[in-house]
Length: 243
Image (cartoon, rainbow, N blue to C red; front, side, top):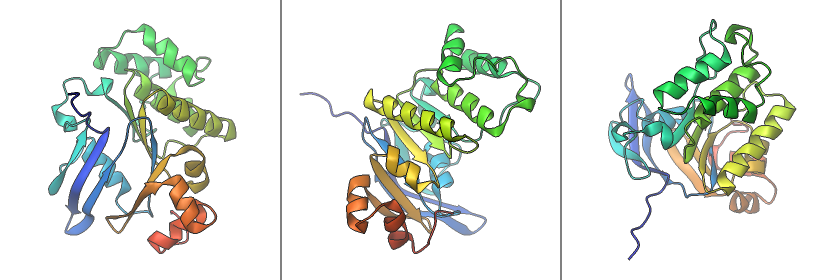
C-alpha cells in the first residue's frame, strides 16, 4: 500500500498571544499539492503570524504547524523544501543582488551556477551587480523571490510578494507562480489584492480576528457571492477591503 503523502501545509488549532492580545485563536487549514492558496484577511487579522508560526519564526501557544508532515525547525535542509519571501527590505544596501544570492546559495548548499539561473528567471540579470541600496522596492522584491527559488523548493510561502512590482512585474509573478504550481509545486500567497488572488489562486483561506472564517476554492467563493472575491470577502470578514 502506498504511504499517504503529507500535505504541503497543515495548520491545526494554532493559537498565539502577543503582549496579552490574542493574534490567532485556533487557526486550522490544510493545503494540497499543485495548488496556489491565497491567504486573505484584514490588517492585524493574523496572516503574518500564521506564516511566522508555520516557518518556525515563532512558537505557538498551542496547536501545531507542519510542512510536509514536519515542523520547520526539525528539517535538515529546509531551503530545499520551502522558499519564503517575508521582507523584500532585508537586503544589505552595500551588497549587490548577485552577492546576496551567492551568500544565500552557500548557506543552502546550492551550486553557485544556480545564482545566474534565478537572476535570469526574475529578470534581474542586467541589474545584478548594482548595490541593493540603489534598488527600487520592486527590484528588491525580485531578488527576494530569486532567493526563495534558489534551492528548487517544493513549496513557496510568500507574504505580500507583489509589493513594489509594476504591472509587468505583477504579470510575471502571476505567470511564474502558476507555472510553479502546475509543475507540482505548492504556493501559500498572502496578499491584499483580491483581483490578483482571484486571477492566480485555486483556493483561499480567510482569517479575521485570529480565526479562519473561510476555507474554500476560489470558484466556490465567486459562486457564493454571485460576482467575485470583492463581493465574497466582506461577507465573511465584515469589512469592505483587505486593508
